[in-house]
Image 1 (tube, rainbow, N blue to C red):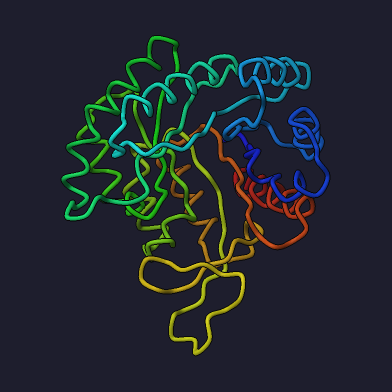
Image 2: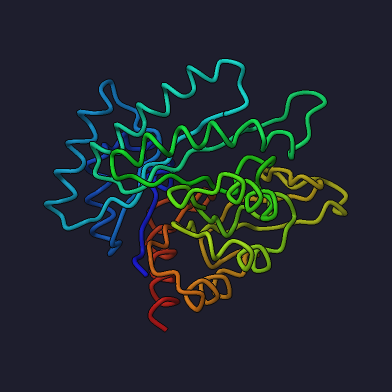
Amino acid sequence: MKIGVSSYSFNKHRRQSGCTYIEMCRMAKDMGFDAIEFINLDAEDPIAEAHAIREECAALGLEISAYTVGADLLRADFEQTRANLFFCIDVAEALGAPLLRHDVCYSLPEGMDWTEAVEIMVPRIREITAYAKEKGIRTCSENHGYIFQDSIRVKTLIDRVDDENYRWLVDIGNFLCVDEDPLQAVMVAAPYAIHVHAKDFLYKMKSDAVPPTNFFGTRNGNYLRGTVVGHGAVPVAACVDYLRKSGYDATLSLEFEGMEDNLPALDAGGRYLRALVEA
């Protein structure tokens, strides 16, 4: 497996320092990462920015593993959503990214359950992945956003789409957001995995008398807070070992959203993941 990092993981440092994407690439390379992925390029001209990033990464010998963006496929104005996603695929092409990850939804319309949402989203996902396929790009969705975060729901969606060009970005930490055991969920997800996020959380039960500060709620009312990969409640080592034994050999991309100092947290998390895959 290659060890990567998401540009999202630098958010705290970026807010504090104003660092550019190019500087971010250099820091990732200096920390020993093999690859970097980008999320929602914040630039006046994303295509031009993507070309500049691609050129810098080629000079550094740093792979670009994916481009990740938001999307709500249940919005009434799907035509606008589709146009936005087609443009994001164009940005991914400019980056030289082989994958585009798009979300599927963040809430359900009143009276709709998730199985009904699947039937609406399936033809829309097929449209998106067909456009990406023309450009040699595969698409995927992540267990993310509460509604399609459980392993069985994501598996059902991918099975219904039934297109090898559309697979799963498996985030081993995000299963805790719906109180699902990460290792059991990874066992469901592994056959569909095309990209993997390694993320870790501190976890507190809702039985605590006072909600902890700087934590957010899970679907069932428990509490999570991001932390350094390897420091939290996610069984990262067991999940990575299962993925490796299942034949996954693509990028393991570090995501960090904790309160700890940003760059030392990335360095520590990267070293931890490297040790796991080289053990």
